[in-house]
Length: 250
Image (tube, rainbow, N blue to C red; front, side, top):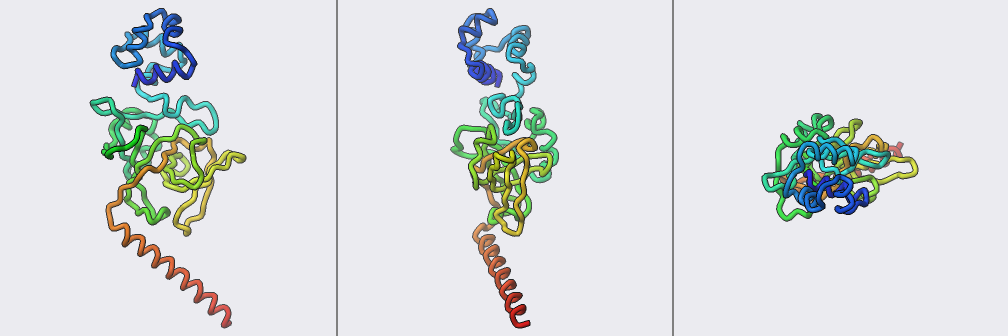
């Protein structure tokens, strides 16, 4: 993670390896080895690097700065903590329903993220992914208890209207909704696929994380669930027609 952070910060500041090496008074090849993860800087060099980029040593070592960056204003998401496996590949952590409340407080804590359960998903594209167990029936036919595998978004501008996302905020916790941006008012509209639930809005500044839907894991017969939902809608239509009919008779 240190090598990735050093490379990211250097490119973010439009620096060449040679220019940065000259300013830090170290060989360019040494800086290249740091960025590739072949060697690690000693404590004094680590502190100089952190001071140069105006970040903490802890951030250099424990957070992947390229995902979210440093919070700088509305629409900019926060620094993301991740965990990696023994081959230095990013894990897919699972946030279960019972852990959702704790996740709100611990999502930036590398130790908390490290202790979350891990899941595997084959042939997944490059990116940072997390699994979220959803609750409630607001997004039928995706069933309660399903796990939403989703990819981390770096900023609000990456949201595509009318697509589904997991949104993390202290106001509403962890929710899975269809989103529409409202840049003029600096807010998102969150929409349930189940029309029994009314849409609501959330200000950009209240959002901690956004994860784009990639796939989901369901643990029951989805066709049966869909059929039950259709039957429920038909029953609701029939009830409304009966009400209209009775009003006309009266």
